Length: 105
Image 1 (tube, rainbow, N blue to C red):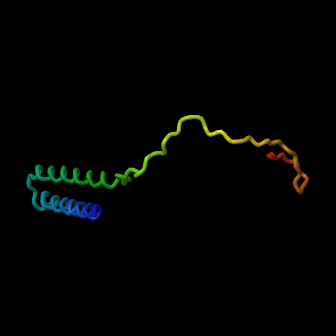
Image 2 (image 1 turned 120 degrees about the vertical axis):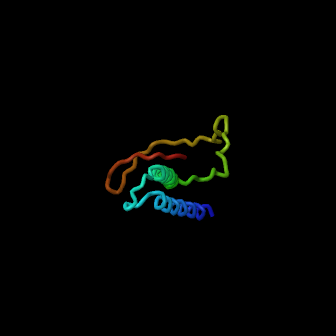
């Protein structure tokens, strides 16, 4: 709905700008003093063109997330029921290279 309305307004403003400049300026065969109408058409074109450019460069905004951050938990971390007894053991792979590994009971 919003995009359709935006396209309709943009198309209308472009048509209005083209019609206004065609009516507001004099042709080359008619050399009249139409400075005021030409200035008004130029200002209108600048305002409408600036609005169109500002609308094009505006990035779409996303809605806020419907959920909040997780609640903070204060205090010490939970303590494990037991601590495994671990030790380092040297092993040999099938090429004969030695490597260390941790073994826990």
